[in-house]
Length: 126
Image (cartoon, rainbow, N blue to C red):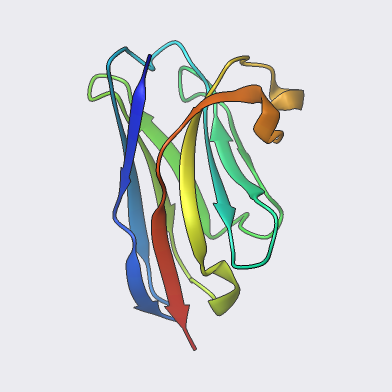
């Protein structure tokens, strides 16, 4: 069983940047697609970004495309989410997750992910 721990969240002004990290332990994630999701208060969890096992393919929600970048370092068993040009509407708890299937058409679905971290809070002030 893999354990995922997110870090890097915090309070930032609109237009600022944050880099989230997701460190995995217990087993390697180097052969798994990974994703980031977020959930704002009183809203449903939503897909943010995903990356395939090698890092060669990435996928983004339209709301973050061009501002966020997902990457991974398999040697460190870690996935990252670089967030630039942050907006107040990006405020949410951000979760990383390990996908059960590395199928591009499915990676936007939360149900494809079998392991989740505890989340890290990102707050963007206006």
